[in-house]
Image (cartoon, rainbow, N blue to C red; front, top):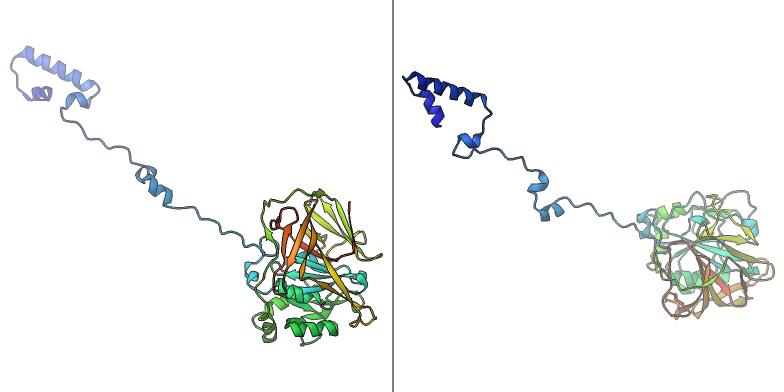
Length: 382
């Protein structure tokens, strides 16, 4: 400031003027240093703060939380993700599917969430395919008549039986128990028709999706569904269950008599059991896929032969006793584990426990086949 002031002062001494001009020239030509020319600090703009710097750490953590994905709706019958969560609010349909050699291959067995298999007259078997969490493809079947054990499935699980006829003895038992039954022979149901190339009676099929769609809008069907309890699955599922160590099994075969044999072969690559009938692998006609099960549960039960309620050919019926307790075998991941089952009363659900520990059975997610096998039938493992 003193230097600048000196420029404005009139100096008469020539020597003094010369010195002032020289100093001034040097000052103008040199780089400026604001700190040296000003005693008062110069205010300069600081860099613009970023958004990260201006948001408190606590606020930054909660300002835009990442959305938490909704957990996938799981099918209560097998622990798998449900194809359509809306289906879980509907009544589970237990469809009677024939397993006579003349009726094979069946349609939509691979779309069932759970399959029950039990002996019928002649010691052949019948499937009850339970549909809840997956859509079917086209017609399902061949559909045949209901059997005595359908009462147990209705009371135990909470399902609506869908079939085509039943014996007089079975129908009397259904009525006495109050069991609802969507019987294709009666009621003028529009969901059944002849289909495919099999000869009658092995060519009767049903439209499961049409039955689902009618729930809530068909008064007769809704009256039946109103008599079905809330679904009560027998088994629990966990992606990493604590399963006891079992004995290694690659294949099992069940013989209900000298000529009927059914079985399962474990596929390590698939991680599931492949279905065999008379040693032949079975495929689903609707999907083209092999019929498989993640877990096969064998329940050994006492069975009664009912002579006074024969089929049209004169063969006596089979009546399985599913109230009580007994032994069984769990087949999962290429191993066999001994289990126990218990159902103390008709309106109680069946419970399954490991034979060694008494702990409840917990399975990995996947389709379950429940094999109801009479005591005395042959079961071999390899």
